[in-house]
Length: 577
Ligand code: FES
Image (tube, rainbow, N blue to C red):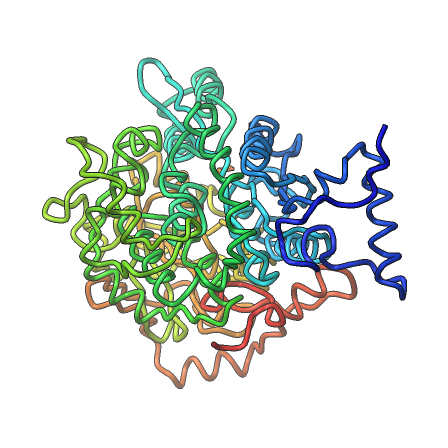
């Protein structure tokens, strides 16, 4: 048995690999000696320890079925790292699933980003593979990696398969909401909704429509932080495992080239990602997350610019909730590379990617494409403008957004009477009461579900149609809040009204009976109440922002920013570049 305490010639400059970020004992040689001794306890040789160290941020959890393929992915990433001469070392971070996080997953996104950032910084890795998938995990990982400044590559877990209910193809979670709305309206019974429940999530993986998880997978790829073609392979496919292996290999190349997120995420790549988000009919949450990721590198995402991009970027991807298909269809049609080919005239082709090649070079390398149905050409879009429009007016001086591609075209210009709910509890208590004074052309307003209000800006902006109207056949109404909605939801829903009601934003002063005008083509959201009357209401009922005594809730309430700043903590954003 050889005594293998000396490393083979390192493939990295001195001070890297296991020598990175030594624990402080006042004697650096001793720190390295001790670290080496401990890891040899796990059976490593000096040869293994001399390799580039590739951290793998693992987010498997029994509470996270969207990450249920994590063991197989980790094995494939390790294989890719080792085939390329690196040493893979897994480490855990927080995992967040949408349906298993109270009060809402968004409350925990920044905590996961801090965990990711600090664990990347604290542990000796030359590059890191970020393995995530469910809605908040990919943004949290990219935010953390951007701040940590270590070369990083995103690997998503991939979408779930679709199921079948009585011959109809179904998938989470647009169909979850569709069937639940039918159940609330009395169109289907208890037994049928139970059978639907068995079919909506047909395998492990992320939601099968263009919800937030799929949106962020496409955004990560467009941003250059994930491999070309890596966003769309479903979770349980061989394609997904090959992407994982290649991501491991690419991480070793990144460790050698030292290409860090700041060299990839630039104003140009952020704009490319916004274009893709608009062209896929992506989740409104993607705007908030991309703003937070860019904010970690001092890159502002301007809502006025977003609206400009929206006016000239059509929706090309025909997936629910804006269109018809599912992520499997998008993958079979060629995925993001095929979409980028269509969007090419609108993109910054010199933006860098994790491969070390530019986006333009990757588009060239992806070949000419083939006939398919899921990704339309620019000349024949699913929706002529981008999926998301930015609204302004005295009800949202800091902006609000609407996913117009998933809204009722008849409600794009609408004036109506406000029916106001003060908070989520008030909504739950009254929305289904038979004596609720509400008509189909009213506008439902929900206050206090913004970043500080709920707290955590829950996806409660998708207010249900009041039961008595649902039973009468009403399918859509204008709904306004300072909250978010699931990327899988559809309807005429105005979100992210900024500043939020809990901070004394104008939404706080709306009363039932006020008139509101929504004009999406004119990008206007107007509370038709005079300034004198609003000033009187403000003086009569001043707002006290929520606070907490201790813990993470205190940190959250004291430092969280508004939607237009990405709902990140103010102290985590970088100064402008
Ligand atoms: Fe995880 Fe939808 S719940 S992606």
